[in-house]
Length: 82
Image (cartoon, rainbow, N blue to C red):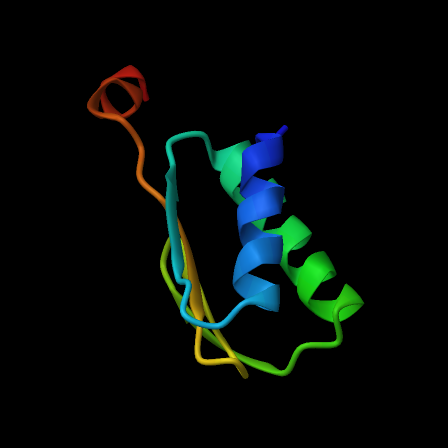
């Protein structure tokens, strides 16, 4: 489960201009959950946006000029365990 602070930060970026959010998750399931939570909040607020997707990185360019970046980066130990 993503921290409550993440949801509060996304809501701040959606409601106030002049704020960007960049978050890096090291757990794939939390990264995935963060993307779905962010999309749900964007749709709830009926905010227009453009999505830019790269491998393990999603950016939402919001109509208020803010950017939300959600990335996944495995820790070096995760790579060694596989």
